[in-house]
Image 1 (cartoon, rainbow, N blue to C red):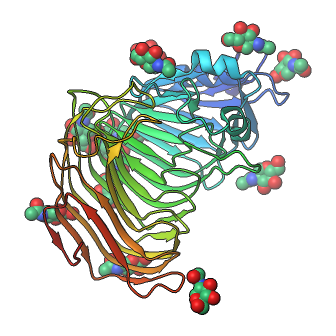
Image 2 (cartoon, rainbow, N blue to C red):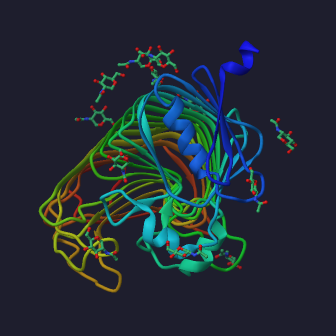
Length: 405
Ligand SMILES: *[C@@H]1O[C@H](CO)[C@@H](O)[C@H](O)[C@H]1NC(C)=O
Ligand SMILES: *[C@@H]1O[C@H](CO)[C@@H](O)[C@H](O)[C@H]1NC(C)=O
Ligand SMILES: *[C@@H]1O[C@H](CO)[C@@H](O)[C@H](O)[C@H]1NC(C)=O
Ligand SMILES: *[C@@H]1O[C@H](CO)[C@@H](O)[C@H](O)[C@H]1NC(C)=O
Ligand SMILES: *[C@@H]1O[C@H](CO)[C@@H](O)[C@H](O)[C@H]1NC(C)=O
Ligand SMILES: *[C@@H]1O[C@H](CO)[C@@H](O)[C@H](O)[C@H]1NC(C)=O
Ligand SMILES: *[C@@H]1O[C@H](CO)[C@@H](O)[C@H](O)[C@H]1NC(C)=O
Ligand SMILES: *[C@@H]1O[C@H](CO)[C@@H](O)[C@H](O)[C@H]1NC(C)=O
Ligand SMILES: *[C@@H]1O[C@H](CO)[C@@H](O)[C@H](O)[C@H]1NC(C)=O
Ligand SMILES: *[C@@H]1O[C@H](CO)[C@@H](O)[C@H](O)[C@H]1NC(C)=O
Ligand SMILES: *[C@@H]1O[C@H](CO)[C@@H](O)[C@H](O)[C@H]1NC(C)=O
Ligand SMILES: *[C@@H]1O[C@H](CO)[C@@H](O)[C@H](O)[C@H]1NC(C)=O
Protein backbone atom coordinates (compact mmCIF):
# COMPACT_ATOMS: atom_id res chain seq x y z
CA UNK A 1 0.00 0.00 0.00
CA UNK A 2 2.73 2.41 1.02
CA UNK A 3 4.49 1.53 -2.21
CA UNK A 4 1.56 2.74 -4.27
CA UNK A 5 1.23 5.93 -2.28
CA UNK A 6 4.76 6.89 -3.25
CA UNK A 7 3.99 6.69 -6.97
CA UNK A 8 2.74 9.58 -8.99
CA UNK A 9 1.51 8.95 -12.48
CA UNK A 10 1.33 11.97 -14.70
CA UNK A 11 -0.56 11.38 -17.92
CA UNK A 12 0.06 14.06 -20.42
CA UNK A 13 -2.23 14.65 -23.39
CA UNK A 14 -2.62 11.47 -25.45
CA UNK A 15 1.04 10.50 -25.67
CA UNK A 16 3.26 8.75 -23.16
CA UNK A 17 3.16 9.11 -19.42
CA UNK A 18 5.56 9.57 -16.53
CA UNK A 19 5.76 7.41 -13.42
CA UNK A 20 7.50 9.23 -10.58
CA UNK A 21 8.91 7.39 -7.59
CA UNK A 22 10.91 9.54 -5.20
CA UNK A 23 13.17 11.60 -7.46
CA UNK A 24 13.13 9.09 -10.32
CA UNK A 25 10.89 9.73 -13.28
CA UNK A 26 10.36 6.91 -15.76
CA UNK A 27 8.95 7.95 -19.10
CA UNK A 28 6.67 5.40 -20.79
CA UNK A 29 5.97 5.98 -24.48
CA UNK A 30 2.51 5.87 -26.02
CA UNK A 31 3.82 3.16 -28.31
CA UNK A 32 1.37 4.16 -31.01
CA UNK A 33 3.07 7.12 -32.64
CA UNK A 34 1.29 9.79 -30.68
CA UNK A 35 3.59 12.60 -29.57
CA UNK A 36 5.63 11.64 -26.51
CA UNK A 37 7.37 15.01 -26.17
CA UNK A 38 4.90 16.38 -23.56
CA UNK A 39 5.64 13.38 -21.33
CA UNK A 40 9.40 13.79 -21.80
CA UNK A 41 9.23 17.47 -20.88
CA UNK A 42 7.09 16.58 -17.86
CA UNK A 43 9.75 14.14 -16.64
CA UNK A 44 12.41 16.84 -16.81
CA UNK A 45 10.12 19.26 -14.98
CA UNK A 46 9.39 16.74 -12.20
CA UNK A 47 12.86 15.18 -11.81
CA UNK A 48 15.32 17.55 -13.48
CA UNK A 49 16.65 19.06 -10.23
CA UNK A 50 18.57 16.41 -8.31
CA UNK A 51 16.78 13.40 -9.79
CA UNK A 52 16.93 10.60 -12.33
CA UNK A 53 15.13 10.33 -15.62
CA UNK A 54 14.72 6.95 -17.24
CA UNK A 55 13.74 6.00 -20.73
CA UNK A 56 12.88 2.31 -21.09
CA UNK A 57 13.83 0.05 -23.99
CA UNK A 58 11.07 1.23 -26.31
CA UNK A 59 10.60 3.82 -29.04
CA UNK A 60 9.54 7.34 -28.15
CA UNK A 61 7.88 9.44 -30.85
CA UNK A 62 8.70 13.16 -30.87
CA UNK A 63 6.66 15.61 -32.90
CA UNK A 64 7.47 18.90 -31.20
CA UNK A 65 10.50 20.93 -30.13
CA UNK A 66 11.74 20.40 -26.58
CA UNK A 67 13.52 22.86 -24.29
CA UNK A 68 14.84 21.24 -21.13
CA UNK A 69 17.60 23.59 -19.98
CA UNK A 70 18.67 24.65 -16.50
CA UNK A 71 18.86 21.09 -15.17
CA UNK A 72 20.99 20.34 -12.09
CA UNK A 73 22.57 17.21 -10.59
CA UNK A 74 20.60 14.86 -12.77
CA UNK A 75 21.26 11.50 -14.37
CA UNK A 76 19.46 10.49 -17.56
CA UNK A 77 19.40 6.84 -18.62
CA UNK A 78 18.34 6.35 -22.20
CA UNK A 79 17.69 2.67 -22.88
CA UNK A 80 15.39 3.12 -25.85
CA UNK A 81 15.15 5.14 -29.04
CA UNK A 82 14.04 8.73 -29.34
CA UNK A 83 12.57 8.92 -32.83
CA UNK A 84 11.82 12.34 -34.30
CA UNK A 85 8.88 12.78 -36.61
CA UNK A 86 9.63 14.55 -39.87
CA UNK A 87 6.10 14.19 -41.21
CA UNK A 88 5.38 17.90 -40.76
CA UNK A 89 8.41 19.63 -42.29
CA UNK A 90 6.75 23.05 -42.09
CA UNK A 91 6.24 22.59 -38.34
CA UNK A 92 9.99 22.22 -37.84
CA UNK A 93 10.90 25.01 -40.25
CA UNK A 94 8.64 27.37 -38.29
CA UNK A 95 9.34 26.17 -34.75
CA UNK A 96 12.92 24.87 -34.42
CA UNK A 97 14.59 26.63 -31.50
CA UNK A 98 17.09 29.29 -32.63
CA UNK A 99 20.76 29.12 -31.59
CA UNK A 100 21.35 32.79 -32.34
CA UNK A 101 24.15 31.88 -34.73
CA UNK A 102 24.15 31.45 -38.48
CA UNK A 103 20.37 30.99 -38.45
CA UNK A 104 20.97 27.54 -37.01
CA UNK A 105 18.22 25.97 -34.93
CA UNK A 106 17.49 22.82 -33.02
CA UNK A 107 14.88 20.19 -32.22
CA UNK A 108 16.02 19.89 -28.59
CA UNK A 109 17.70 22.41 -26.31
CA UNK A 110 19.13 20.48 -23.39
CA UNK A 111 21.46 21.61 -20.62
CA UNK A 112 22.44 22.43 -17.08
CA UNK A 113 25.08 21.60 -14.50
CA UNK A 114 26.40 18.26 -13.33
CA UNK A 115 24.43 16.12 -15.76
CA UNK A 116 25.20 12.52 -16.68
CA UNK A 117 23.47 11.34 -19.83
CA UNK A 118 24.07 7.63 -20.36
CA UNK A 119 22.82 5.70 -23.38
CA UNK A 120 24.31 2.41 -22.12
CA UNK A 121 25.61 1.64 -25.61
CA UNK A 122 22.20 1.33 -27.26
CA UNK A 123 20.16 4.40 -26.29
CA UNK A 124 19.57 6.11 -29.64
CA UNK A 125 18.63 9.47 -31.13
CA UNK A 126 17.03 8.86 -34.53
CA UNK A 127 16.38 12.08 -36.47
CA UNK A 128 14.54 10.45 -39.38
CA UNK A 129 17.09 12.30 -41.49
CA UNK A 130 16.41 10.77 -44.90
CA UNK A 131 13.26 12.89 -45.16
CA UNK A 132 15.41 15.97 -44.54
CA UNK A 133 18.18 14.93 -46.94
CA UNK A 134 15.57 14.46 -49.66
CA UNK A 135 13.70 17.68 -48.77
CA UNK A 136 16.75 19.98 -48.83
CA UNK A 137 18.06 18.57 -52.12
CA UNK A 138 21.61 19.59 -51.23
CA UNK A 139 20.75 23.21 -50.24
CA UNK A 140 23.29 24.22 -47.61
CA UNK A 141 22.17 25.41 -44.17
CA UNK A 142 18.45 25.59 -44.93
CA UNK A 143 17.10 27.95 -42.27
CA UNK A 144 14.86 26.12 -39.81
CA UNK A 145 16.18 22.64 -40.55
CA UNK A 146 16.81 21.44 -37.01
CA UNK A 147 19.95 20.09 -35.38
CA UNK A 148 19.22 16.88 -33.48
CA UNK A 149 20.50 18.14 -30.11
CA UNK A 150 21.84 21.38 -28.69
CA UNK A 151 23.81 21.04 -25.48
CA UNK A 152 23.20 24.51 -24.09
CA UNK A 153 24.86 26.32 -21.17
CA UNK A 154 26.07 23.03 -19.79
CA UNK A 155 28.88 22.69 -17.28
CA UNK A 156 30.66 19.83 -15.59
CA UNK A 157 28.70 17.13 -17.39
CA UNK A 158 29.12 13.83 -19.21
CA UNK A 159 27.35 12.31 -22.20
CA UNK A 160 28.31 8.71 -22.85
CA UNK A 161 27.46 5.48 -24.67
CA UNK A 162 24.92 7.18 -26.95
CA UNK A 163 24.05 6.48 -30.58
CA UNK A 164 22.92 9.19 -33.00
CA UNK A 165 21.55 8.00 -36.32
CA UNK A 166 20.13 9.83 -39.33
CA UNK A 167 20.36 13.29 -37.79
CA UNK A 168 18.08 15.91 -39.30
CA UNK A 169 21.07 18.27 -39.77
CA UNK A 170 24.07 18.89 -37.50
CA UNK A 171 24.02 16.06 -34.98
CA UNK A 172 24.84 17.99 -31.85
CA UNK A 173 26.09 21.43 -30.99
CA UNK A 174 27.79 22.24 -27.72
CA UNK A 175 27.00 25.90 -27.19
CA UNK A 176 28.09 28.13 -24.28
CA UNK A 177 29.23 24.99 -22.45
CA UNK A 178 32.35 24.09 -20.45
CA UNK A 179 33.90 21.05 -18.84
CA UNK A 180 31.86 18.54 -20.80
CA UNK A 181 32.99 15.01 -21.66
CA UNK A 182 31.50 13.28 -24.67
CA UNK A 183 32.59 9.65 -24.47
CA UNK A 184 31.79 6.52 -26.51
CA UNK A 185 29.51 8.21 -29.01
CA UNK A 186 28.41 6.62 -32.29
CA UNK A 187 27.14 8.87 -35.10
CA UNK A 188 25.85 7.69 -38.46
CA UNK A 189 24.04 9.94 -40.92
CA UNK A 190 24.09 8.59 -44.44
CA UNK A 191 21.72 8.97 -47.36
CA UNK A 192 20.32 5.90 -49.05
CA UNK A 193 19.55 7.72 -52.29
CA UNK A 194 21.22 10.27 -54.55
CA UNK A 195 20.55 13.29 -52.29
CA UNK A 196 23.62 13.88 -50.12
CA UNK A 197 23.45 13.83 -46.31
CA UNK A 198 24.81 17.37 -46.36
CA UNK A 199 25.33 19.51 -43.22
CA UNK A 200 25.18 16.41 -41.03
CA UNK A 201 28.17 17.42 -38.88
CA UNK A 202 29.02 14.89 -36.16
CA UNK A 203 29.46 17.60 -33.52
CA UNK A 204 30.08 21.33 -33.43
CA UNK A 205 31.32 23.58 -30.64
CA UNK A 206 30.33 27.22 -30.20
CA UNK A 207 31.49 29.44 -27.33
CA UNK A 208 32.58 26.30 -25.52
CA UNK A 209 35.71 25.41 -23.57
CA UNK A 210 37.29 22.33 -22.01
CA UNK A 211 35.38 19.80 -24.08
CA UNK A 212 36.68 16.22 -24.45
CA UNK A 213 35.57 13.94 -27.26
CA UNK A 214 36.75 10.40 -26.64
CA UNK A 215 36.09 7.17 -28.51
CA UNK A 216 33.78 8.52 -31.20
CA UNK A 217 32.82 6.72 -34.36
CA UNK A 218 31.36 9.02 -37.02
CA UNK A 219 29.95 8.13 -40.44
CA UNK A 220 28.58 11.21 -42.17
CA UNK A 221 28.59 13.62 -45.07
CA UNK A 222 30.10 16.76 -43.57
CA UNK A 223 32.53 17.85 -40.84
CA UNK A 224 33.28 14.87 -38.60
CA UNK A 225 33.68 17.33 -35.72
CA UNK A 226 34.00 21.11 -36.12
CA UNK A 227 35.10 23.81 -33.73
CA UNK A 228 33.27 27.01 -34.51
CA UNK A 229 33.60 30.47 -33.03
CA UNK A 230 35.09 31.00 -29.58
CA UNK A 231 36.10 27.42 -28.84
CA UNK A 232 39.16 26.54 -26.77
CA UNK A 233 40.83 23.68 -24.96
CA UNK A 234 39.22 20.93 -26.99
CA UNK A 235 40.57 17.36 -27.03
CA UNK A 236 39.50 14.78 -29.60
CA UNK A 237 41.02 11.34 -29.12
CA UNK A 238 40.77 7.62 -29.74
CA UNK A 239 38.15 8.14 -32.43
CA UNK A 240 37.48 6.91 -35.95
CA UNK A 241 35.97 9.02 -38.71
CA UNK A 242 34.47 7.60 -41.90
CA UNK A 243 33.65 9.42 -45.17
CA UNK A 244 33.10 12.94 -43.75
CA UNK A 245 35.40 15.93 -44.12
CA UNK A 246 37.66 15.30 -41.12
CA UNK A 247 38.19 17.48 -38.06
CA UNK A 248 37.53 21.13 -38.91
CA UNK A 249 38.28 24.48 -37.40
CA UNK A 250 35.63 26.95 -38.53
CA UNK A 251 34.33 28.34 -40.53
CA UNK A 252 34.77 31.53 -38.54
CA UNK A 253 34.85 35.18 -39.50
CA UNK A 254 31.38 35.23 -41.03
CA UNK A 255 30.11 38.24 -39.08
CA UNK A 256 31.53 41.64 -40.09
CA UNK A 257 33.48 43.38 -37.35
CA UNK A 258 32.96 40.57 -34.84
CA UNK A 259 35.99 39.04 -33.11
CA UNK A 260 36.13 35.24 -33.03
CA UNK A 261 38.82 32.76 -32.03
CA UNK A 262 39.60 29.07 -31.86
CA UNK A 263 42.63 27.90 -29.89
CA UNK A 264 44.20 24.88 -28.25
CA UNK A 265 42.47 22.10 -30.15
CA UNK A 266 44.27 18.76 -30.10
CA UNK A 267 43.21 15.77 -32.19
CA UNK A 268 45.24 12.65 -31.45
CA UNK A 269 45.23 8.87 -31.68
CA UNK A 270 42.45 8.79 -34.29
CA UNK A 271 41.75 7.03 -37.60
CA UNK A 272 40.54 8.83 -40.71
CA UNK A 273 38.93 6.39 -43.13
CA UNK A 274 38.10 7.80 -46.56
CA UNK A 275 37.58 11.29 -45.20
CA UNK A 276 38.21 14.25 -47.49
CA UNK A 277 40.77 15.86 -45.19
CA UNK A 278 42.32 15.06 -41.82
CA UNK A 279 42.56 18.55 -40.36
CA UNK A 280 41.40 21.74 -42.01
CA UNK A 281 40.77 25.37 -41.19
CA UNK A 282 38.38 27.71 -42.95
CA UNK A 283 37.71 31.39 -42.48
CA UNK A 284 35.50 33.76 -44.43
CA UNK A 285 37.02 36.50 -46.58
CA UNK A 286 37.62 39.92 -45.05
CA UNK A 287 34.90 41.43 -47.21
CA UNK A 288 31.24 40.89 -46.47
CA UNK A 289 29.37 39.32 -49.35
CA UNK A 290 25.77 38.40 -48.57
CA UNK A 291 24.42 37.43 -45.17
CA UNK A 292 24.34 34.34 -42.96
CA UNK A 293 23.49 31.51 -43.06
CA UNK A 294 25.24 31.06 -46.42
CA UNK A 295 26.88 34.44 -46.96
CA UNK A 296 28.89 36.89 -44.89
CA UNK A 297 32.53 37.61 -44.12
CA UNK A 298 34.51 40.50 -42.70
CA UNK A 299 35.06 38.96 -39.27
CA UNK A 300 38.15 39.47 -37.11
CA UNK A 301 40.10 37.22 -34.76
CA UNK A 302 42.53 34.32 -34.79
CA UNK A 303 43.07 30.57 -34.94
CA UNK A 304 46.13 29.23 -33.15
CA UNK A 305 47.79 26.33 -31.34
CA UNK A 306 45.95 23.60 -33.21
CA UNK A 307 47.36 20.10 -33.77
CA UNK A 308 46.38 16.84 -35.42
CA UNK A 309 48.78 14.12 -34.39
CA UNK A 310 49.50 10.39 -34.10
CA UNK A 311 46.68 9.27 -36.38
CA UNK A 312 46.13 6.66 -39.06
CA UNK A 313 44.87 7.56 -42.53
CA UNK A 314 43.21 5.38 -45.12
CA UNK A 315 42.28 6.68 -48.56
CA UNK A 316 42.09 10.41 -47.80
CA UNK A 317 40.18 11.69 -50.82
CA UNK A 318 41.50 15.27 -51.12
CA UNK A 319 44.40 16.24 -48.89
CA UNK A 320 45.23 15.68 -45.25
CA UNK A 321 46.13 19.29 -44.48
CA UNK A 322 44.07 22.20 -45.71
CA UNK A 323 43.54 25.86 -44.93
CA UNK A 324 41.30 28.28 -46.78
CA UNK A 325 40.63 31.90 -45.92
CA UNK A 326 38.56 32.23 -49.02
CA UNK A 327 35.16 31.00 -47.79
CA UNK A 328 32.54 33.17 -49.34
CA UNK A 329 28.93 33.50 -50.39
CA UNK A 330 27.74 30.76 -52.72
CA UNK A 331 28.40 32.05 -56.19
CA UNK A 332 30.73 34.88 -55.11
CA UNK A 333 34.44 34.62 -55.85
CA UNK A 334 37.65 36.43 -55.03
CA UNK A 335 38.68 38.64 -52.09
CA UNK A 336 40.87 35.74 -50.97
CA UNK A 337 43.61 38.03 -49.64
CA UNK A 338 41.35 40.19 -47.50
CA UNK A 339 40.80 38.25 -44.28
CA UNK A 340 42.72 39.66 -41.31
CA UNK A 341 42.01 36.58 -39.20
CA UNK A 342 45.44 35.41 -38.10
CA UNK A 343 46.21 31.71 -38.34
CA UNK A 344 49.35 30.54 -36.53
CA UNK A 345 51.09 27.58 -34.94
CA UNK A 346 49.22 24.80 -36.72
CA UNK A 347 50.68 21.27 -36.65
CA UNK A 348 50.01 18.07 -38.53
CA UNK A 349 52.35 15.41 -37.16
CA UNK A 350 52.84 11.68 -36.88
CA UNK A 351 50.20 10.96 -39.50
CA UNK A 352 50.57 7.80 -41.49
CA UNK A 353 48.61 6.05 -44.19
CA UNK A 354 47.26 6.37 -47.68
CA UNK A 355 45.94 9.18 -49.84
CA UNK A 356 43.96 8.76 -53.04
CA UNK A 357 45.98 11.52 -54.72
CA UNK A 358 49.28 13.32 -54.33
CA UNK A 359 48.18 16.46 -52.44
CA UNK A 360 49.50 16.55 -48.89
CA UNK A 361 48.77 20.19 -48.16
CA UNK A 362 46.53 22.71 -49.82
CA UNK A 363 46.99 26.03 -48.06
CA UNK A 364 45.25 29.22 -49.14
CA UNK A 365 45.97 31.85 -46.52
CA UNK A 366 45.12 35.52 -46.75
CA UNK A 367 47.63 38.08 -48.02
CA UNK A 368 46.29 40.52 -45.41
CA UNK A 369 47.48 38.19 -42.60
CA UNK A 370 49.74 35.41 -43.90
CA UNK A 371 49.70 32.15 -41.93
CA UNK A 372 52.57 31.67 -39.50
CA UNK A 373 54.28 28.55 -38.20
CA UNK A 374 52.60 25.80 -40.19
CA UNK A 375 54.21 22.44 -39.44
CA UNK A 376 53.94 19.04 -41.07
CA UNK A 377 56.19 16.70 -39.13
CA UNK A 378 57.16 13.05 -38.83
CA UNK A 379 54.50 11.78 -41.20
CA UNK A 380 54.41 9.00 -43.75
CA UNK A 381 51.93 9.48 -46.58
CA UNK A 382 51.42 6.73 -49.14
CA UNK A 383 50.47 8.58 -52.32
CA UNK A 384 47.66 7.45 -54.59
CA UNK A 385 47.66 6.73 -58.31
CA UNK A 386 51.16 6.71 -59.78
CA UNK A 387 52.28 9.80 -57.91
CA UNK A 388 55.85 9.73 -56.67
CA UNK A 389 56.07 13.24 -55.21
CA UNK A 390 53.65 14.69 -52.70
CA UNK A 391 52.49 18.23 -53.41
CA UNK A 392 52.27 21.19 -51.06
CA UNK A 393 50.40 24.10 -52.60
CA UNK A 394 50.55 27.31 -50.63
CA UNK A 395 49.46 30.91 -50.81
CA UNK A 396 50.39 33.63 -48.32
CA UNK A 397 52.28 31.40 -45.93
CA UNK A 398 54.88 33.26 -43.85
CA UNK A 399 56.71 30.33 -42.25
CA UNK A 400 56.71 26.56 -42.38
CA UNK A 401 58.50 23.70 -40.70
CA UNK A 402 58.91 20.18 -42.05
CA UNK A 403 57.83 21.07 -45.57
CA UNK A 404 58.43 23.60 -48.28
CA UNK A 405 55.71 25.11 -50.36
C1 LIG B 1 -2.23 6.00 -28.07
O1 LIG B 1 -1.97 5.60 -26.74
C2 LIG B 1 -2.47 6.48 -25.74
C3 LIG B 1 -2.06 5.96 -24.39
O2 LIG B 1 -0.68 5.90 -24.28
C4 LIG B 1 -3.96 6.60 -25.85
O3 LIG B 1 -4.43 7.56 -24.91
C5 LIG B 1 -4.34 7.03 -27.24
O4 LIG B 1 -5.76 7.00 -27.38
C6 LIG B 1 -3.74 6.10 -28.28
N1 LIG B 1 -4.01 6.66 -29.60
C7 LIG B 1 -4.34 5.89 -30.62
C8 LIG B 1 -4.56 6.61 -31.91
O5 LIG B 1 -4.48 4.70 -30.51
C1 LIG C 1 15.47 -3.87 -26.42
O1 LIG C 1 14.29 -4.47 -26.91
C2 LIG C 1 14.46 -5.21 -28.10
C3 LIG C 1 13.12 -5.78 -28.52
O2 LIG C 1 12.20 -4.75 -28.66
C4 LIG C 1 15.45 -6.34 -27.91
O3 LIG C 1 15.69 -6.97 -29.13
C5 LIG C 1 16.76 -5.75 -27.39
O4 LIG C 1 17.65 -6.80 -27.07
C6 LIG C 1 16.51 -4.92 -26.15
N1 LIG C 1 17.75 -4.31 -25.79
C7 LIG C 1 18.23 -4.35 -24.56
C8 LIG C 1 19.57 -3.78 -24.37
O5 LIG C 1 17.61 -4.81 -23.65
C1 LIG D 1 26.12 15.70 -9.16
O1 LIG D 1 24.91 14.97 -9.36
C2 LIG D 1 24.89 13.71 -8.73
C3 LIG D 1 23.56 13.06 -9.09
O2 LIG D 1 23.50 12.79 -10.46
C4 LIG D 1 25.02 13.89 -7.25
O3 LIG D 1 25.09 12.61 -6.64
C5 LIG D 1 26.25 14.70 -6.92
O4 LIG D 1 26.27 14.98 -5.55
C6 LIG D 1 26.25 16.00 -7.69
N1 LIG D 1 27.48 16.73 -7.46
C7 LIG D 1 27.48 17.95 -6.94
C8 LIG D 1 28.83 18.59 -6.77
O5 LIG D 1 26.47 18.53 -6.65
C1 LIG E 1 2.10 21.25 -39.54
O1 LIG E 1 2.69 22.35 -38.84
C2 LIG E 1 2.10 23.57 -39.20
C3 LIG E 1 2.97 24.67 -38.57
O2 LIG E 1 3.17 24.44 -37.20
C4 LIG E 1 0.67 23.59 -38.72
O3 LIG E 1 0.05 24.81 -39.06
C5 LIG E 1 -0.08 22.43 -39.38
O4 LIG E 1 -1.37 22.33 -38.84
C6 LIG E 1 0.65 21.11 -39.16
N1 LIG E 1 0.04 20.08 -39.97
C7 LIG E 1 -0.36 18.93 -39.47
C8 LIG E 1 -0.92 17.96 -40.46
O5 LIG E 1 -0.28 18.67 -38.27
C1 LIG F 1 14.34 27.57 -23.12
O1 LIG F 1 13.66 27.79 -21.91
C2 LIG F 1 14.27 28.79 -21.08
C3 LIG F 1 13.54 28.79 -19.77
O2 LIG F 1 12.19 28.94 -19.98
C4 LIG F 1 14.21 30.11 -21.81
O3 LIG F 1 14.82 31.11 -21.02
C5 LIG F 1 14.95 29.97 -23.13
O4 LIG F 1 14.84 31.18 -23.86
C6 LIG F 1 14.39 28.85 -23.94
N1 LIG F 1 15.26 28.64 -25.10
C7 LIG F 1 14.81 28.64 -26.35
C8 LIG F 1 15.82 28.44 -27.43
O5 LIG F 1 13.64 28.78 -26.63
C1 LIG G 1 18.80 34.83 -40.62
O1 LIG G 1 18.67 35.57 -39.41
C2 LIG G 1 18.63 36.97 -39.58
C3 LIG G 1 18.56 37.64 -38.23
O2 LIG G 1 18.95 36.80 -37.21
C4 LIG G 1 17.40 37.33 -40.42
O3 LIG G 1 17.41 38.71 -40.67
C5 LIG G 1 17.45 36.56 -41.74
O4 LIG G 1 16.25 36.79 -42.45
C6 LIG G 1 17.59 35.09 -41.51
N1 LIG G 1 17.79 34.41 -42.78
C7 LIG G 1 17.05 33.38 -43.15
C8 LIG G 1 17.39 32.78 -44.47
O5 LIG G 1 16.15 32.94 -42.45
C1 LIG H 1 31.42 18.23 -11.10
O1 LIG H 1 30.84 16.93 -11.05
C2 LIG H 1 31.57 16.01 -10.28
C3 LIG H 1 30.94 14.63 -10.43
O2 LIG H 1 29.55 14.69 -10.47
C4 LIG H 1 31.59 16.51 -8.84
O3 LIG H 1 32.34 15.62 -8.06
C5 LIG H 1 32.19 17.90 -8.80
O4 LIG H 1 32.12 18.41 -7.49
C6 LIG H 1 31.46 18.85 -9.73
N1 LIG H 1 32.11 20.14 -9.78
C7 LIG H 1 31.44 21.28 -9.85
C8 LIG H 1 32.25 22.51 -9.90
O5 LIG H 1 30.21 21.32 -9.86
C1 LIG I 1 36.34 14.66 -18.07
O1 LIG I 1 37.44 13.82 -18.30
C2 LIG I 1 38.62 14.32 -17.73
C3 LIG I 1 39.77 13.45 -18.19
O2 LIG I 1 39.46 12.11 -18.01
C4 LIG I 1 38.46 14.35 -16.21
O3 LIG I 1 39.61 14.89 -15.62
C5 LIG I 1 37.27 15.23 -15.86
O4 LIG I 1 37.02 15.21 -14.48
C6 LIG I 1 36.04 14.76 -16.58
N1 LIG I 1 34.95 15.71 -16.39
C7 LIG I 1 33.74 15.36 -16.03
C8 LIG I 1 32.72 16.42 -15.97
O5 LIG I 1 33.45 14.20 -15.77
C1 LIG J 1 32.09 24.89 -14.50
O1 LIG J 1 32.72 23.86 -13.73
C2 LIG J 1 34.09 24.08 -13.48
C3 LIG J 1 34.65 22.89 -12.73
O2 LIG J 1 34.25 21.70 -13.32
C4 LIG J 1 34.25 25.37 -12.70
O3 LIG J 1 35.63 25.63 -12.54
C5 LIG J 1 33.59 26.52 -13.44
O4 LIG J 1 33.61 27.68 -12.65
C6 LIG J 1 32.15 26.21 -13.76
N1 LIG J 1 31.57 27.26 -14.55
C7 LIG J 1 30.32 27.67 -14.43
C8 LIG J 1 29.89 28.73 -15.37
O5 LIG J 1 29.57 27.19 -13.61
C1 LIG K 1 49.07 6.70 -30.97
O1 LIG K 1 47.74 6.28 -31.23
C2 LIG K 1 47.52 4.89 -30.99
C3 LIG K 1 46.06 4.60 -31.30
O2 LIG K 1 45.74 5.02 -32.57
C4 LIG K 1 47.80 4.54 -29.56
O3 LIG K 1 47.68 3.15 -29.39
C5 LIG K 1 49.20 4.98 -29.18
O4 LIG K 1 49.40 4.78 -27.81
C6 LIG K 1 49.38 6.45 -29.50
N1 LIG K 1 50.75 6.85 -29.24
C7 LIG K 1 51.04 7.78 -28.37
C8 LIG K 1 52.49 8.10 -28.24
O5 LIG K 1 50.19 8.37 -27.72
C1 LIG L 1 51.98 25.69 -30.50
O1 LIG L 1 50.82 24.90 -30.21
C2 LIG L 1 51.12 23.80 -29.36
C3 LIG L 1 49.82 23.01 -29.21
O2 LIG L 1 49.42 22.50 -30.45
C4 LIG L 1 51.63 24.28 -28.02
O3 LIG L 1 51.97 23.18 -27.22
C5 LIG L 1 52.85 25.14 -28.24
O4 LIG L 1 53.25 25.70 -27.02
C6 LIG L 1 52.53 26.28 -29.22
N1 LIG L 1 53.76 27.00 -29.51
C7 LIG L 1 53.88 28.29 -29.32
C8 LIG L 1 55.18 28.88 -29.68
O5 LIG L 1 52.97 28.98 -28.84
C1 LIG M 1 49.38 4.42 -63.60
O1 LIG M 1 50.21 4.20 -64.70
C2 LIG M 1 49.76 3.17 -65.55
C3 LIG M 1 50.85 2.93 -66.59
O2 LIG M 1 51.32 4.15 -67.11
C4 LIG M 1 48.43 3.61 -66.18
O3 LIG M 1 47.95 2.61 -67.01
C5 LIG M 1 47.45 3.88 -65.07
O4 LIG M 1 46.22 4.39 -65.60
C6 LIG M 1 47.99 4.87 -64.08
N1 LIG M 1 47.09 4.97 -62.95
C7 LIG M 1 46.63 6.13 -62.48
C8 LIG M 1 45.69 6.06 -61.32
O5 LIG M 1 46.95 7.21 -62.95
